Length: 260
Ligand code: COA
Image (cartoon, rainbow, N blue to C red; front, side, top):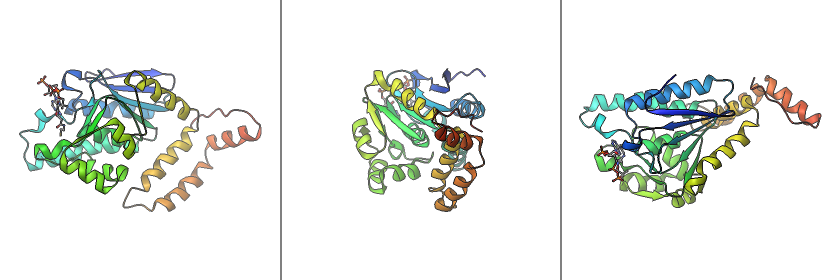
């Protein structure tokens, strides 16, 4: 499918999705959210794709937030719908995707941009990146999961500081707080993300899907994470990847996983 606001590129079994509105610092308007939903859906169902990298175009921004011009005139009901629809179509959708998604944060990740990076399973940042949730400076609160995912990643106290002050932190600070896994010079960002993606893609896609579900279950109020892990662990034993992985180990050869 062709897109107007994003670009996709495959490198082996890795799909790179690039948000491409650099003139608006890749702000998330409705059309971009729709296209991202379609792109993640396609990547999720493409058997040749094992890992997805999400980044922003240009050198300045990953995503500078939700597109303020689109919601400035909304009423309370429209605001609620904006957040609900966005969470369902993109933010929860990415977190629940059964293939690993790595955010390559190449600049500003603000508001919905940081929320999108936090929906990804792993974050790597360029050393010029700046992160924050500036919503209260606009008279709103984070509505794409920011009040939930930020405390889980960096703790309630630090998250409250960022959310209440609307301040931005540097990539180095974000790494120290565990908001990003690693910081690298901007020129190396995509290579770094690719190296990790390739490492992941050598492992069993079926097992990774079970692991993603289990990790997410631990953060779902409605689920018992430990019990869920037991069930998912058992279910991996029914996959071809399990047979292949264990057989290859015993035969002292590299596994060739089908993902089934
Ligand atoms: N929504 C809509 N447009 C946005 C945007 C957003 N979240 N963030 C940036 N843009 C647009 C600007 O309006 C500007 O468009 P214009 O050239 O048509 O006027 C363009 O992107 C470039 O941004 P600009 O503000 O000129 O860049 P800067 O380098 O001076 O400042 C930021 C960069 C990120 C500090 C600043 O753009 C900003 O504060 N953006 C909003 C961040 C935010 O509050 N996000 C949370 C939204 S809930």
